[in-house]
Each structure stands twice: as structure tokens, then as C-alpha cells.
Image 1 (cartoon, rainbow, N blue to C red):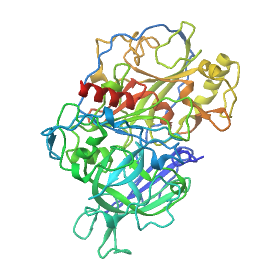
Image 2 (cartoon, helix red, strand yellow; image 1 turned 90 degrees about the vertical axis):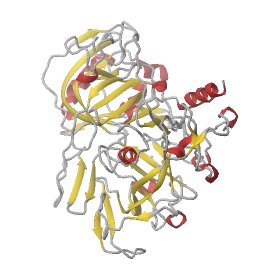
Image 3 (spheres, one colour; image 1 turned 135 degrees about the vertical axis):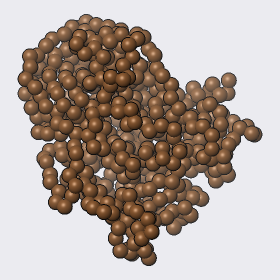
Image 4 (tube, rainbow, N blue to C red; image 1 turned 60 degrees about the vertical axis):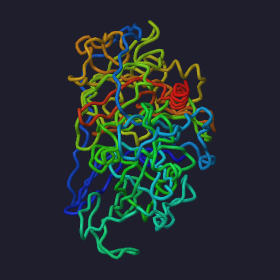
Length: 553
């Protein structure tokens, strides 16, 4: 199973970034702490420490009231996850172009000018990873699919000089550098390397080049040349924007709602043009990876610096799915430049961004186990009771890690409460249960430290989804994120079994992975130091269709 649990085996990963002046290493330690010689040590997300404390029981009741959501100028792109294997190359998003707005004369503008609004695109469910279409080069853009990863900084994919680099596994062929008129390699003899280090000319190049090398603790690695080309994300899945439309994009308020608008958000991206990959990078479905951490090299930061979006923020909305199909099921939206209120079922509430070098993280103050399930952070039954586990520490949010890995010290108390509630032990073994029994399993709740400057006093903490008023009277404005069984139990269609995907393995660094993120529109706002949460169905197609319908009206 090609599951991108940081490329399939374990969440442990070591990233080697070698700069022009020195070696710079970024590492995430999940199962073991690894030291790198001749490297600048990375500052990692602070460990989630479990404090001794009494277990509290609280009865919950409440309703979703007082919705107030701010608007933002944003663009949204489809994320295409990992599950589609056989049909992915010719999948057409099932767009019915009859409902797409017609293009009127005089309603277009030149690329790169005017306001930026919204651009939406479909997401597909994968084996725990989500990836987006990236169209690269001119005159005819070439598609490369890239896994969206908030735990790395570099965007990279195989190029035509890459040999045995997984073409038979990936969604697309190698990026043909000779077919792009805008492709250029960074010449470190005349400019600086921003992602790698300067090396003598290699095969195919007559000048010094910037080399990038990354390796992972489970054995995968890749090597690349730093290059630049024109890119845009999203758009129509099975075809680039027509060259005849390159000079024109919509200027109306719904600019970006149509996949046709994607080219208008293009920019020059520095990326890794891979010439060698090993391990699970070969056998994964997506062609490459899109780095989204807090870094000047990350995709969203380069997009902002190029003026393609107005604000230094983005959001990820992963669908909640009880099952996943190899044919590909809708899996949400990535929004660059902000968030889209049309995705949100509840007000956006903001946790404090626990700064830790380049990684997005939150300060977890408590973990709760709630009996009798429930999908939302607010209960829907008086029979739902929460049991508290005291936790204190920073935990990183990593969209590129499939599962959630909590501190080892939390395991004993968690398992004891689980047995008390369910009458059965908690383990990561596969189980055969009905869908009804799945919904009755406990919901895990995470209490996150609130972002003080973003507290909305008009929201009732006891009635607002996502606030902790019902579980913590002393800190009612803290954020409460629900992780129901439909998210932490992974379903196998082939064997009709479920597998719990919350692990207690971490002696130091813990990770909230993609299964924690599911069912929420999550805003990563690096500039204001906050991470926003809103419960959502992450239904891309309904938004696009409604936007097209309103345009026709």
C-alpha cells in the first residue's frame, strides 16, 4: 500500500538542505532522534509532555449558534490525493461545461494585472496523502502532480534527465525540460543558490549549477538541480489552459471560481528538477512534492513574493471519508492566499501558532476522549461524556504525514480510558466492525491554546463549534478540534476492515497528521502567527457549480 506516511513507512524523516555557504539540515524525528554531522541542527517542534493530573469527567450539551465568518481574497486549487491508480491519467473531474460561465467580449484582462480573487479546484481522496495538479512551462504547460506537504519547503518532481524515476507508477511522465521555452537552470557562477549548494558542471550543463539533495530516515532520497519555470496550480485536470487564452482571464468578482482562471495565477517558481530518486519516491502515485512549510522557498511564499496572491497565508481542507475508492473520491480544496467562507460550516476560530523553526505547530493543552462518538466538536447527545487527559506541549501539524503520532507517555492513560469507555483494549490492529459500531466509537478531542489577538468576544464559547467553553471553564476561548472515528479509523475496501491510526510512539516530537486535519478548513496564517479551524465538508464541486449558477443568473 503506497501510503505517504512520510513516504510510506514511518513518520521519521530527515531532510538535507545544503546551502551555498553551508550545509543546512532540517530534520523531523518521529521514532528516533538522529544527529547529522557537519550540519546546522534544526529547531524542532517542542515535545508534547504529559503532566500528571486527575482525570475529569464532564457532561456536554450545546448547539451550533452565532455564526460569523470573515471574508478574504483568496484563490483555491484542487488537491488530488493518492487513491486513484488506474483511472487517474484520464480522469476529467466530470465537469459539465454547460454550467460554466460563457466568456463575454471585454470581460478579460491581461495576466498579472488587477485584483486577485478566488480560484477553486477539486480534491481527490488518496492513501492518506493529498496532491495538487501543477502545470509547468511554456508554450504548452506540462502537468506534474505534487503532494502538498506542510512539513517541507522545496517543490520538486522528476525531469527528463531522470532515469528509473517511477514513470510507470506516477500519474504523469517526466517533465520534458526541452519542451519548455521558459525553463532555466540557476547558474551559481552568476547568482546565489537558494535551495542547494554550488557544484561544478554536471552532465548536460556547461556551467556551475545549484544541487539539492534530500534523504529520509526510512531510506528514500532524491537529488535535483535548482531551476525556475512558469507554473500554475489547479485548473482543468486533463488539459492545460489553451495558449489562445493565455492573455485573458476574468475580471469579475468570481474570478478564480472557474478552473479556466487558473493560468491567471501563474508565476515563476524555483523548484528542484530531479535527476535521481530512490525508495518510495519511485512507487508513490504523485509525481513529486510541494513544500508548504514556513520558508522563503515554499510554494505559497514564492507565490506571494511574485504578487500572485495578496496575503501570506493558505488553507487546506481535507474531506472526511469513511471509505476510499481506487477510482478516486473527492477530497477537498487547497486555498492559496487565505480561506473561502463557502467551505465553512462553523466560524473560523484561531489557535496560537507554536513557532518552531519552519514547521506549523500548535500548543496542545489537553486531549479528551468522548464516549458515544459524534463528528463535531460540539456534542449532539447528552449521553456523550468527555474524559480529560492533561497534556502540555507543542505539536506540529504535518499534511504530509498520513497518521497522528502522540507522546508515548500518554499511552497508558489513553488506553485505560479507552477500555473504561468501550470495554475493549485500544490497539493498532485491524478490526472488523459495522459502520454503526464505527460511529459509536469514541471521538478524540484536542484542546489548543487560543490566539489571543483573534478571540471574538461575540461568540459564545459554550455554543460555538470549535471553542472549549463546555470542557474548560477557565480557558473557554481555547480551540477544540474533533477527531471522530471516521477520521482515525482507516478503512480497507479490499478486506472490509478498519485500522486505528492514532499511535503512541513518540518520546519527543509528536505529529498531528492528515487524519487529524480531515473535516476542517484549516488556515495556516504565518504572518499573524495563528492557525484557524472551521468544520467543513470540503465539498469543492458544489461550490463551483453554485458559483457558475449564480453567474448565469
